[in-house]
Amino acid sequence: MPEFFPKSPRFHDALKAGGLSLLAVICGELDAAEKPSNLFPVDDFPFSSWQLPPPDPAVKVPAGLPAFYPIKELMALADRERLVDFHEDANSVTLTATLDEDLDLAAELKRAKGRHAKAPVPLGPRMVVGQGGDPENLTFVKILNAHGIADIQFLSHPPAVKGGVNVAAARTADGAFRIAAAPISDPSVTLIPLFNEHGGRTGGFKLPAGIAPPVRVVAGDFLSQAAGDEFVVTSRSGSGPAAVLSAEGAGVLTLGSLLAGKRDGEIRIEPVPNESGGHDLLAVSGNHWQRLAFEGRKSIEFAVKPDLQGTGVFPSAFSPNRLLIATADPLRSIWLETEDGIEFEKRDVGAFENRFWYDLGHKHAGATADWKSPPEGEYVRSSQYAHLRVEGGGPRANDPAGLETAPLWTAAEAEAFGKRIFGKYDMPLNEQAVKMWEPTYTHRMSGWFKPWIDTKDPRSGLSRYGA
Image (cartoon, rainbow, N blue to C red; front, top):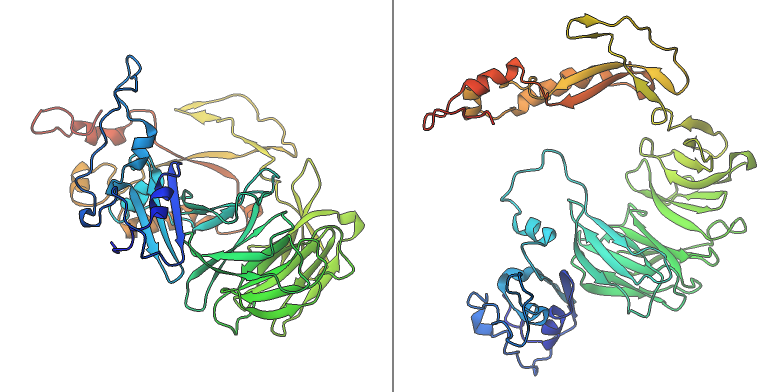
């Protein structure tokens, strides 16, 4: 633990600030003249000898409840177990502390890293989110871990700044994260701060000339020839220019006004993956769109025809050149797809979600039904029903002894099983034969369970696996 860590009263004040997970951000150099608090003696780290303070006799404990401690004393406790994370760089020191390490799931996951079962599926990416645009919102930024749980949160602007915050995350040339935080509606903020992934402020940039707040800011690899990612910032009104800045906030390129003369209200910008592995910039205002490419690639600008009214434009996950346009149909999920802004293809993405599939089960347990299936309609369709037996399909379903020496599934067995089940469905959804698979453990005591029930525990003579 760095010796200077406990020397600043600002550190202690941050611990006393309240909340379930607390993040103290200490920026700048610490004053060497400040004296350490008595609560944090340098020689006693990691606080192994500290205990809860004795109960206050003046505090009356409610009848029938266990003894408790006033929250003030609890928050003042400097137990080492409550310090979840510490990070220091050239510009900031950040500390994450928790009031109760046993009830704070984010803290538990961080401490358990490498000591618990590996997730059976790939975890999601870390995400940065900001408070939405409600006028009463502040500018809190949360960083979600791979489990989708916020383990870092901080206030990006003073409490006087309200109306939510727009965030964008970029990587610097050396791979470090930088988070830009721009107020959504406050017209007075002209300095956009930058933070690292721990919530420590690393710097910021002033809005370039001609770009008036409030602004939109996005991040992406717009200039592939330059190392790292870039930020693009422009006024939410769409008036004035747009600017490209490095992940550290240095000006790189000035763009002209996006959708000049063709705006229909505020402008929205977002990165769009391109074929080169980087990003183009998508600018949208009402029914007018512009896909702006950099480094000599072709840009596209177009407007939706009046009969194809759209409510939003988004990049497609299936093609780097394809755009999806959401429509305003209240009853159907119709998307428009285009690559050039001239030809539009309608796709009913809710066609399967809005259908009711049924299987009347003509045969079951050796009996055959005498009813007839009703005629199919557009949204009520006949299907086949199939169990995917989880317990009976396992390679050691009938072999308790084998499970003592081998896992339930080896990697090779699982891969072969997956290919066998899903191989024939490697085609577009609308071309597949519809079969309703149900991964299930049966509620019946079938023969699959018999080897497990018959296996006895040698110590007690009772069934070793049967409940």
